[in-house]
Structures are given as structure tokens and as C-alpha cells.
Amino acid sequence: MSLVRPRALVPLTASLFAAAFFCAHLIAHARSSSDSSATSSSSETNVSLATEDHIESPGWWPTKSAASLDKFVGTAECAKCHSQIAASQAATPMAQAATPAANSEILQSHADLTEQRAAYHYELSTSRNAVNFSVSDGAQSLSANIAWAFGLGHKGQTYIYERDGGFYESHLSFYKSLQSLDLTTGHDAGNPDDLKSAMGRWLDAGEARRCFGCHTTASSIAGRFDTSHLTPGVQCESCHGPGATHVSAMKLGKIEQGRAAIFNPRRLNPTASVDFCGACHRTWADVILADQKLRSVMNVRFQPYRLEDSKCWRNSAGDPRLACVACHNPHEQLNQTASSYDAKCLTCHSSASTAQNSAEKSAPKLCPQSKSNCITCHMPQVEVPTIHATFFDHRIRIPRPNSAYPL
Ligand code: HEC
Ligand code: HEC
Ligand code: HEC
Ligand code: HEC
Ligand code: HEC
Ligand code: HEC
Ligand code: HEC
Image (cartoon, rainbow, N blue to C red; front, top):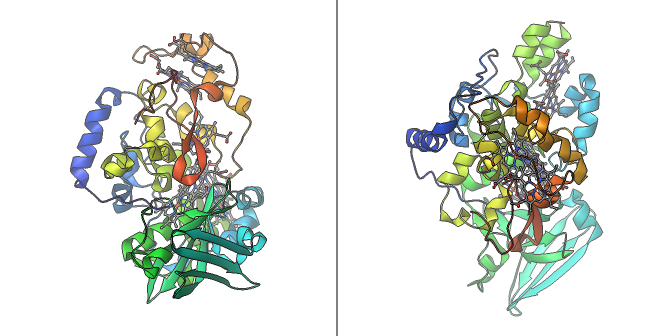
């Protein structure tokens, strides 16, 4: 389930393009955040930037290559002082976004998966400490040991194997709704030319690095990608940056020094905060810069893009009440009770807040239809056929009967 994102434009053009789009909203809320040396300077603008631009700026940013491995202390160390956060974060799908294949619960509970696609027969078999993936066309066969399972499998799980010194993405993935294998999202549905391409897709060095950059921690150090020193999953230091300096200062009781030595996304302005999650969920600018492939229902996966194209966001100039962290605590499981989000909507869409609303914004309106379960109508679930699953559309809107999905 990969995303091709060639950089079609140079950074400056990118920012200008984004700036033009958002020009009406640049006035308010440009709350900049320069009080911490650990805060990236690219986060001071109120315009969505490409992730690459954030990474090139000084300071920490998720998916950035860290200077040295010995600056990482690991989640177990953070847990010594932040035990509650560590306990709840460990249970999230993000913390488990990748695992060594032999540890995959899906594979352990589906020890023998088979599938026939056109002329090819597939087998994914899991024993106690190895996962073997093989494909046969009746005459010949190929097989490989699966090294990594990507995705917790809330929606799906894709497998990575190594061959001739390179990484490959399995041609088939496990889908939760099917409880079986089907074509990996993004792969060509046509009949593969040969066994090698029937088995999987080669990931060039940049793609493999990005793939591990979003699903694991500390996979790239000093610009070099190497899986031997990564920690699977999105761990504390994937979001907050390497913690050694923070920990040693805190152990000495140097609180202010310690606070300055760790990246705290709470200090970001709302647009940069959304870009922060977008380092992996893709920023609005990332999606705009990507190729035409994303002009499809597939882009419902990219919540920052969807959200920032909604009227709520556009007409409220990047209000903190609409940042990702206003609705989601990244240290906790996704809340799946629809009514629990009502209060988030009503902070703007109620008569009290409408009256309070400042003059330069268009006042949020009230719903003529209902007073509860707002998301069930206004964040419709959209099916992505190749993932065999639905996503909640973060482009908050009024879906009219028979109206097309707004791209
Ligand atoms: C020795 C104890 C200790 C360890 C270990 C530790 N922290 Fe902290 N951390 C603290 C203290 C104390 C604070 C300040 C709390 C406060 O301001 O209320 C803090 C604050 C923070 C903050 C907020 C900083 C701010 O801007 O106020 C973040 C983020 C953070 N820690 C992340 C981490 C991460 C990630 C790890 C592991 C890499 C970690 N901590 C390990 C003690 C620790
Ligand atoms: C370092 C990369 C990274 C960053 C940064 C990141 N995410 Fe994620 N997130 C992921 C990956 C990978 C998954 C898919 C996990 C899986 O199911 O395997 C995910 C999944 C999620 C989910 C779905 C959980 C579920 O129950 O299915 C939510 C919600 C989420 N992220 C919210 C956030 C928010 C909010 C932020 C910003 C504060 C954020 N993420 C930042 C990588 C990241
Ligand atoms: C730019 C960051 C990024 C890159 C690169 C990336 N992913 Fe992801 N991946 C995510 C995020 C965020 C999610 C959760 C949202 C979603 O499902 O789209 C996710 C979801 C997934 C899922 C579904 C998990 C589930 O059950 O919900 C799989 C499987 C997956 N990725 C595999 C891969 C593989 C394999 C690669 C590399 C070939 C890759 N990803 C590259 C960020 C990334
Ligand atoms: C997916 C990204 C992500 C991961 C992983 C993550 N955090 Fe955070 N963390 C955040 C964000 C975003 C905030 C700011 C939340 C806000 O603005 O409300 C935050 C805030 C914090 C704070 C400061 C809270 C405050 O009141 O300012 C601490 C402490 C912290 N995280 C510790 C941890 C520890 C320990 C781990 C690992 C167990 C961890 N985080 C994993 C994104 C993450
Ligand atoms: C930060 C304030 C804010 C929050 C939070 C917010 N909205 Fe909005 N919303 C607005 C503004 C401003 C508009 C534009 C008013 C207008 O239509 O002129 C708007 C417009 C809308 C519209 C009309 C869209 C259209 O296409 O005409 C709907 C429906 C809506 N919001 C629903 C929601 C729901 C549901 C939530 C919670 C999931 C929510 N909003 C959260 C500020 C907000
Ligand atoms: C106004 C509230 C709101 C905001 C803001 C918001 N989300 Fe969500 N998000 C939701 C709701 C509601 C769900 C669906 C929960 C459920 O499963 O019932 C959801 C689900 C998700 C999922 C799971 C995928 C899916 O659709 O099933 C991911 C990932 C996610 N959000 C990421 C983000 C990111 C990243 C941002 C910032 C761009 C963000 N969200 C902002 C309300 C919000
Ligand atoms: C049962 C589905 C449903 C639920 C639940 C629902 N709405 Fe609506 N909402 C609609 C429909 C349909 C419209 C369009 C009405 C029209 O144009 O006549 C609408 C319109 C709106 C508008 C635009 C009003 C305008 O004057 O343009 C806003 C804002 C809104 N809803 C917010 C909310 C909020 C906030 C909640 C939760 C408190 C909510 N809605 C719950 C169906 C729903």
C-alpha cells in the first residue's frame, strides 16, 4: 500500500502554490511557536508544507533521519517517567504499525493462507519462527522468507521480503474484512509477466526508506537507511525525536533544560500540527504535489488533505479546535463512539459559539436536521475498493444524494 510522491515542484513553488490557495486565511491564528529550540522553524507558517520541506528545516520532524543512534533511548526508558502515556500508547495501532513477520498475530492465527490468482498459486505459511511466501505457476516456483509485516491489520497487512540485497512488497496482502489474501493496494491488477513480478514489487531505495520511515522508529540514521537498528512501530521517539538529552537533563532535575530538549508538538500552530500528523498521514501539500493517481477516492486515506479542504477548516483559518489532536489523542486508541465527537463540532456549531465568533470569520451555522451523532451524516464512510474497507471522510460536508465524491 504505497504512495508514489514525486516532487513535481521545487519547495518555493510548493509553498507559493499553497499560499495562494490559502491566501484568504492567512490573517488569523498565525500563532508562531519559537519558544523551543527543539521546535522546527518550518512550523511557524500558517500554510501546509510538503513533509520534505519540514524535514529540511532545523529541528525534529517525524520521518526525519536522526543524527546518531545513541541519542535514542527507547520507549521502555520513557515509560519510567511517563508510565501512563506509555501504557496506553503501546496498545495503539500506530505503536504496532510493523512487526517482524514471525510475531504477526494475523499470521500466527492464519498459519496457512493460500490464494489462486490467474495462473499463479500463492502460499503464505507460518511456522513457529519463520514465515514462508511462495508462488507457483504449476511448472516452476519461487519462495522467500517474509521479514516484516506492515500494518496492524485493522484494515490490512502487507509483507516485506528481501531478495538480492533489495526489499520487495508482497503482491498479495491480508485484508481483515476478507480474512484472506488479495491484491496489494497500488499493485497492477493485470496478469504478471513472470514469477518474480507475480511474487512482489521491488521497492527502490527511496521507497523502502520511506515505507520504514512511517511504520518504524530509527530506521534512518545520519541519512543512512538500515533495518538492523530500527524499532518496529511508531514509538515515542518517532514523534518526539531522540530523547537521550531530555532524559539525562530530567534525571538531573534540570526541568527547563529537559523540556527544551524534546520536541513537543503541542507548541505547534494548528496548521503545523496537522502537517505534523501529515508527516505520515500526508500533508495537504504532499497530496497536492503527488501525481494524478491521488485524484481518486484513494485520497480519503489522507485525512489532513480532506480536512483542510472542508468548509469548516477553510472558513475558520486553521482553528485549533479542528487540529487532528482536537479529536484524537495520539497516545490512545481511536475513539469509535460517534456521539463522543458531537462536543467537538458543537464548540463551533452551537448558538453560544456562533455568537462568540470573531468578525473576520464566517460564522458556523447550526444544523437544521439533528443535534447529535454529527459525524454519522457529515463525515461519511467512503469505501476504498482496493483496501476492502471504509474510511471516515475528514472532508466534513453535507453529502447530497447521488452527488459524486468531491476530489
Ligand atoms: C527521568 C524521567 C523522564 C524520562 C525518562 C523521560 N521524561 Fe519526558 N518529561 C519528564 C519531566 C519531569 C517532564 C516535565 C513534566 C512537566 O512539565 O510537567 C517531561 C516532559 C516531557 C514532554 C513535554 C515537554 C514540554 O514541552 O513540556 C515530552 C514531549 C516528553 N517528556 C517526552 C518524553 C519522551 C519521548 C521520553 C523518552 C524518550 C521521555 N520523555 C523520558 C521526565 C522524563
Ligand atoms: C511516524 C508516522 C506517523 C505519525 C507522525 C502519525 N501517524 Fe497515525 N498512523 C501511522 C501509521 C503507520 C498508522 C497505521 C497503523 C496500522 O494500522 O498499522 C497510523 C494510524 C493512525 C490512526 C488509526 C488508528 C486505528 O485505530 O486504526 C489514527 C487515528 C492516527 N494514526 C492518528 C494520528 C494523529 C492524530 C497523528 C498526529 C498527532 C498521527 N497519527 C501521526 C503513522 C503515523
Ligand atoms: C508517508 C508515510 C507512509 C509510507 C511511506 C507508507 N505508509 Fe503505510 N500507512 C501509513 C499511514 C499513515 C497508514 C494509516 C492510514 C491508512 O490506512 O492509509 C498506513 C497504513 C498502511 C497499511 C494498512 C494498515 C491497517 O490495517 O490499517 C498497510 C498494510 C501499510 N500501510 C503498508 C505499507 C507498506 C508496505 C509501505 C511501503 C511499501 C507503506 N505502508 C508506506 C503511512 C505510510
Ligand atoms: C503519533 C505521534 C506520537 C507518539 C507516537 C507519541 N506522542 Fe507524545 N505527543 C504527541 C503529540 C501530538 C502531543 C501534543 C498533544 C497535544 O497537543 O495535545 C504529545 C504530547 C506528549 C507529552 C506532553 C503532554 C503535554 O501536556 O504537553 C508527553 C509527556 C508525551 N507526549 C510523551 C510521549 C511518550 C512517553 C510516548 C511514547 C510512549 C509518546 N508521547 C508517543 C504525539 C505523539
Ligand atoms: C473551528 C470551528 C469548527 C468546527 C470544530 C467544526 N466546524 Fe463545521 N464549519 C465551520 C465553519 C466556519 C463553517 C462554514 C460556515 C458556512 O457554511 O459558511 C462550517 C461548515 C460546516 C458545514 C456545512 C458544509 C457545507 O458544505 O455547506 C457542515 C455540515 C459542518 N460544518 C459540520 C461540522 C461537523 C459535523 C463538525 C464536527 C465533526 C464540525 N463542523 C466542526 C467551523 C467548524
Ligand atoms: C472533528 C473531529 C476530527 C478531526 C479534527 C480529525 N478526525 Fe480523524 N477521525 C474522526 C472520527 C469521528 C473518526 C472515525 C472514528 C470511528 O472509527 O468511529 C476518525 C478516524 C480517523 C482515522 C482512522 C481511519 C478511518 O477513517 O477509519 C485516522 C487515521 C484519523 N482519523 C486521522 C486523523 C488525522 C491525521 C487528523 C488530522 C488531519 C484527523 N484525523 C482529524 C474525527 C476527527
Ligand atoms: C441525520 C443526519 C444528520 C445529522 C446526525 C446531523 N446533520 Fe447536520 N445536516 C444534515 C443535512 C441533511 C443538512 C443539510 C440541510 C439542508 O440543506 O436543508 C445538514 C446541515 C448542516 C449544517 C449546514 C447548515 C446551513 O445552514 O448551511 C451544519 C453546520 C450542520 N449540519 C452541522 C451538524 C452538526 C454540528 C451536527 C451534530 C450536532 C449535525 N449536523 C448532525 C444532516 C445531519
